[in-house]
Image 1 (cartoon, rainbow, N blue to C red):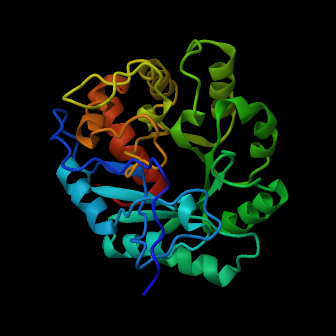
Image 2: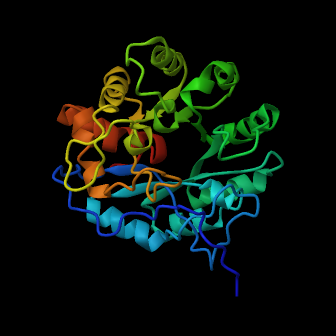
Length: 306
């Protein structure tokens, strides 16, 4: 019997019984950013983790998928599991072809292990540069990993904060694989959408082989309103940033729920209302189909139809 660790004090569990969205997701929609946590009794959390979450199982993720009208998922390795991808892989395999994975690997990973991950449905690795979540990420190690995954046609998912982009983008420019940016590079939404900080991010995305997730408004918002209590026009302070990205890079944007929303401090959103955020940032049916179906299918299921 595995000893269970208590949750991090103040941890917010995911929202139970989410509402039914007003916005109907198009057939083939991909939730391109979500996670599983444990369950801890089956998949222990990493000793070096920075937080201990609640359980969030594959069955609960798939129940949310079906409730929201999502067709497929991209399950991103959670930092609480470190480089043990067992929980993520278990969920991807259980999805019967309807999920892909993004793994965390160490620089000494061998070709045989990478090929096993590829056969299981992994299509990328994640590099985390958010200092409160991980220890320093040595760039030499990450370069080594990127070179190893390039022959598989994988990509690198990058998680960083806007203020850190100036010191990181030179390194990012050297990576020999496509890049996928989590949560629009976490812009400071109190600054102008046409200001120099976000302009730098847009320039970085424009000059590289970069895909951008217009996800996590609940993590970026300052003034809200939150996706709670029937609020169908939530996070209006984040909308201009996401809409700008969708308009500038319509063929390289992705969307995801970020369920079960790790490390939120202020509130836990209703995932049904998060779906209703999508039409605010993708103004036409064509843009929504690219964001939700065409782009993630091209990246994660190339050659397959939705």
